Image 1 (cartoon, rainbow, N blue to C red):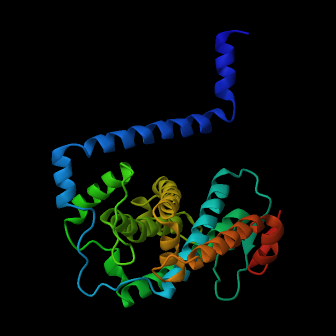
Image 2 (image 1 turned 60 degrees about the vertical axis):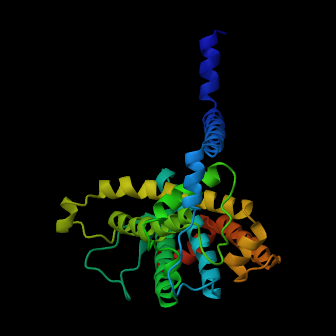
Length: 309
């Protein structure tokens, strides 16, 4: 066997690409850490970190801590996002769906034209989207009603150099030391702001444009074609995947018990309550992931329409 044929066999192996990507990512991460640690030895960089420690002063009236509603909102958002990503990937990659669904054209939702048949995967994805949007509306209302928006909306220009400072601290593996119970570091603040007020709306408006509910002859279609929506929607999904991975990693790596208590138990101690609730939420989400298959989805979908092959 020639060298070229051996090389071709290796690169065609289904594990080659993911392994190569993983190794490449680890190498890049290692280089990033080494560069960040070297930068921190430079006097101008040290002065920059002193001037901008990584967090901005919080506005007057900013609430301290996290209310209980934010805990269950955190769980619901995690639950919906995980299943939305899964179902969205199935919609994107499945060529022959196991079942199809057609909406009942009666009741509250009734149209002149007959409903369009869609895959059961797409029905599940759209149903999750609707629940996620409803939950998001409740989240936004409570966010502004309770003043929690002050924690994730930039109010000072120094948030940007402080975000660079926090990023350098993370990259050098010398974590920022602020307590999220009182104030997020600036990189967290900007990330949460982008997630809530940029990425989520983009996911919604592009998802609606791609759905069958969007009018096919709307005047705006010339300026907002479905192809553009698709080009935006998929990268937004990738952003959410990356956000979840990085977010969970940092939560566990920067004081898991305290962070999980903030997020799930609404307290600032080091008990195991937050971890227990988090573990239960993971089990619940994993169970939903397992049950999200045609065998279990058909009976639910049939309540809202006709399920067929």
